[in-house]
Image 1 (cartoon, one colour):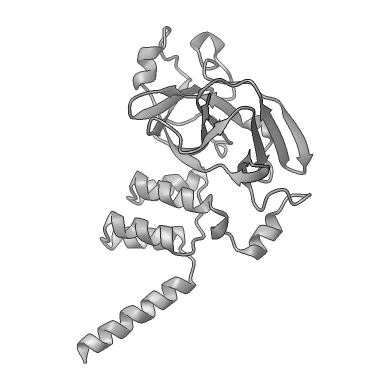
Image 2: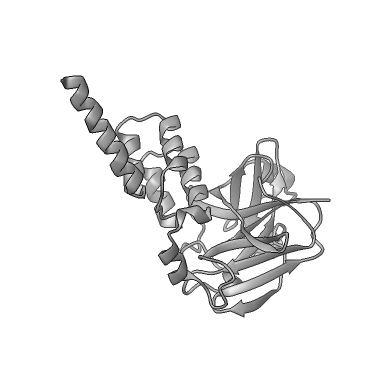
Length: 257
């Protein structure tokens, strides 16, 4: 009888879980309940999800004890069109219906395809300091992305489409060339809204021009980028100081020649 009751309980739980989209709170509860990282990752990948992955959300997830792998899986899950319900996508669709939701896309075989984001850890030091000739100037921030290469490989000319969140301008985005290491990629970026050109904060910044296609929707064409690792860094969510230890996300890609 007890075995039968236990089986029915877990069956009911599975049905409820299958019908209810996972949220940030649900994942936090799973981790705090002691479920293994593999179980949490498998659930995130297989179940419907409705995560929020803004800068403040990522900080809250990290503070709750979630590992970088779990957080990255949540970010990647929300980059998939399958995680967005049709009514929500229609409500967020930009004028012209070019893409279904807020995010960054790249042109592939004539279609706009999601450009998956990666987690950024902001810090000081690292191998970037050894590459720089003038050191790290106070006020400049290093971003660190795990892994030597982006999973998204593209060829020039690169076409990118940005559907920006409400109240965010295209000028708040930065195109950066990463400095490659054995196990990570790093970049230096500006802080406080000021570019310290003498300190090298512009050394990884790649200028670009954009064309507005629809409200909050911009096209960026990059015809002359060389081979290497790049990323489009969005708004920091109001934290213009780029606080050390913060987490963020960058839309990365690898150019093949």
